[in-house]
Length: 330
Ligand SMILES: C[S@@+](CC[C@H](N)C(=O)[O-])C[C@H]1O[C@@H](n2cnc3c(N)ncnc32)[C@H](O)[C@@H]1O
Image (cartoon, rainbow, N blue to C red; front, side, top):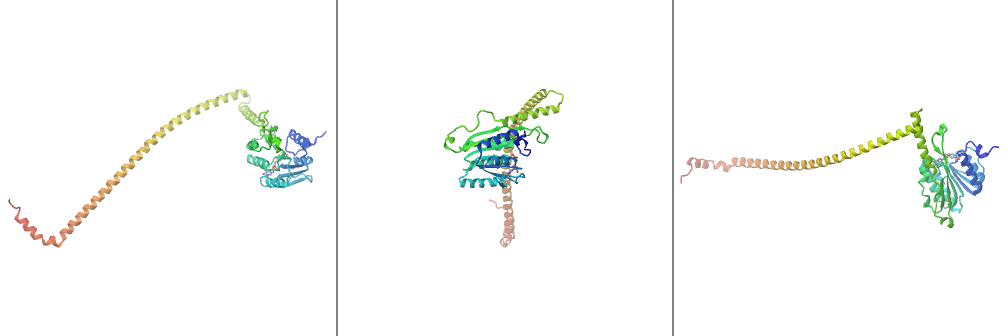
């Protein structure tokens, strides 16, 4: 017997996620729902089948025909979503269900979530976040401080855990994963202290660790197809340890060199100060020398003027006679 949610070939979700989403929707029957990121519109049709009205945000309209209760908001969710939420809030309308599956960049995911949580129209709501197993999406979700909104009563980012792909087009990439965030702004809910699901270790980081180990094992297999991968990895680990020890020694040697260079620098600073002092002394001596020369030239000029003066010439015979008399005897 064909099962509709499994036979859909364009819906961008794992089968388990489809079952979880439609199961949740059939219980919740939202009066108003939002999907951020609709692509062809396969998931949008499912949300619409269980909701009073659905608002879809995507850069392009869906290719699949949609029922009449779907309103398309074509453009960037970061531009359009806050305005639409503000209209709902102004009309006193609540958004009961939201699927966040649009911009998958860390900043994009974070902004979509924060825009939702900031809105009074998201007061009694179930939020699902898709692809929480993906490293970049998870980075964005982890950046949201859910506890900062007291109306957030429960967060399980691995409500449906993700997958590591084997198929060639997505080989070794982490995708899927549904995160669940419950919002309840009623007074009873606000009194609850715990927000995060405390029973389990977060699955996506565990998957990330498994991916790293898996890739290392694959690399070891490629390097030595007939060898024992555990043995090869152990040898690589030993080599990495030895390299780390060598790097530590090099770091110590560099530190010593740095101390020596600092000492050389201090010595050079001293020499520079001394050189500046000597320069200043030399310059002062040069100034003194120039002053002496100017004074001598001035004296020469005065003597020349005296010898050329009429009074010197008039008194010439007198000086000659005085010379002829010779020195006086006492
Ligand atoms: C993974 S697909 C959505 C799949 C869909 N929810 C489903 O389950 O079939 C992501 C969609 O997000 C849309 N998208 C990416 N950035 C967006 C943005 N800033 N604003 C609105 N939609 C965006 C893309 O155009 C793409 O159609």
